[in-house]
Image (cartoon, helix red, strand yellow):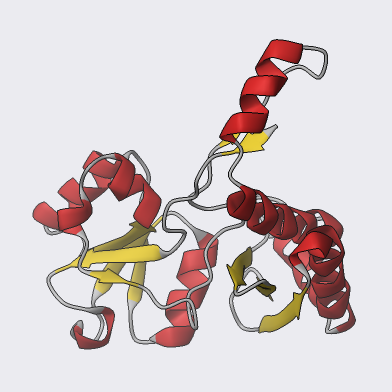
Length: 212
């Protein structure tokens, strides 16, 4: 398995105004519970409208007046060559992306020597380390698509930092914590953050999300 160079992992807003300048009660479209909860915590006055479909379908909902804006992954727009549509990159201080967002993973058979040699050459070390820490965090929590869990690991000057959040399905309670350490111990760091959040009550929130 290899991880190619990671694109910008942040979420972005597409609208006529920045998030802070959107009018009171503006309607924002997203199909993500994680994004919904973080939007509610940042601006409780916003109305969240559930949307589905590809990027073009979602963009049309703004044009048609169904919503005032949408929140999507920056990487999706970058890969489609639609960066010019981005109004604002949402700050990770308030909006932590999904685990592995912006990364592409390539897998092959263990016994396929030629493919494995190719993967070794294409693997991007920083992307591998950060996504490994995030995926370990998620696995240790036992979370899945139903639970609003997010994590972002960053590597700066030889130090690995990982931020994580876990919320209940209704968004009433959201836990946040972080850990820093040696990037060579990315797996241990992801586990440590998960265990820290479990001690804060994360397991109960995840169980709550699964039953709703």
